[in-house]
Image 1: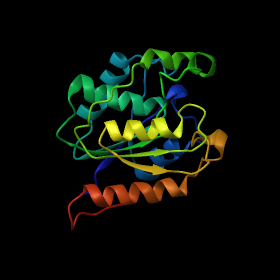
Image 2: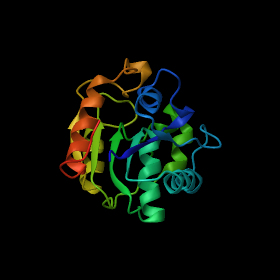
Image 3: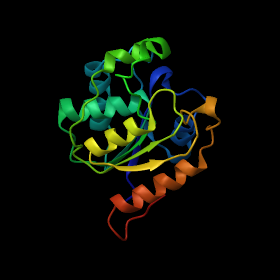
Image 4: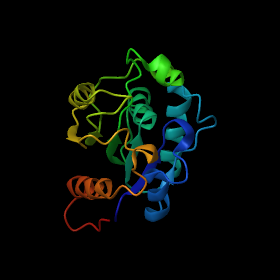
Length: 190
């Protein structure tokens, strides 16, 4: 059986044209909807993710973008993971400790410090070389700390609608490769 995707949006809940929203519909994914998608806190956002994980049957793959990535790593720190979470695709991990974050997106500061412990499941970090919310070397350092694989997306901005990534076909390829690596042979995959 193919794992169910759990979409974990960042600030603003990844609007209608965002690849996360398109994937929710395309893949029949579960989706985390925060009470206040503009005001993250590690405890509240991680608790909501945990509720969705508990309510979604079968094996799961978490798909986070931006502050959604931070939600996943805070959830892993606070809840210790979950036996049915088989992996995570972590796209454009926002650096809550970045020096200019107070000017760029002050709400993100509530998610600092970013946990740097190894994740209890395999993960793939995808980051751009010119993302204003995380420097490429910092995204690589996150991947190393989380014991995750790292893939650069080149100069692709924040990998969202504003940077031209509504239909993110390259992301679907990465998702497919990650699912192939995280599921046993003979299992149906996307």
